[in-house]
Image (cartoon, rainbow, N blue to C red; front, top):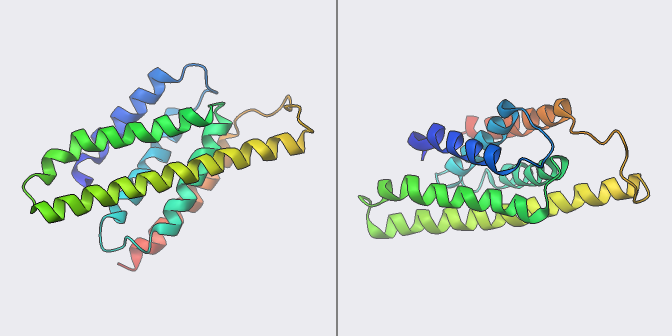
Length: 171
């Protein structure tokens, strides 16, 4: 999976850029950073640290859902973005799994699908939490200054990256 990281991130980011023209504009570097973090956690999730990164995966997916809400996406669009990653993984790493023993390859595929399914559920929860928080703070009326806060998103990404680094450090 690590061998395909850069290609997957670029293809995923390009697809998001072409697809979501109506959403709040986001710097490409921020988007790539978010996607790279998710992908790096997935790499660790199929290795020996899989139990240790569960909480980090949860935080990253919840953040992805909140980030999707901040970009003005619908909940279904957040789901679709993560589902696109599933398709990319099948196309990119599927051929790399064929030389493995059948049992080992199947275990990796099932693990990735389980991780993605949980990630989608948590991203939708994060999206919903962000939406509800916005509605409650504004009495149901969107605030005029509710623009995407890049600095806040970058800070949250730093925190999640630090969580991942702390887990991986103990490998």
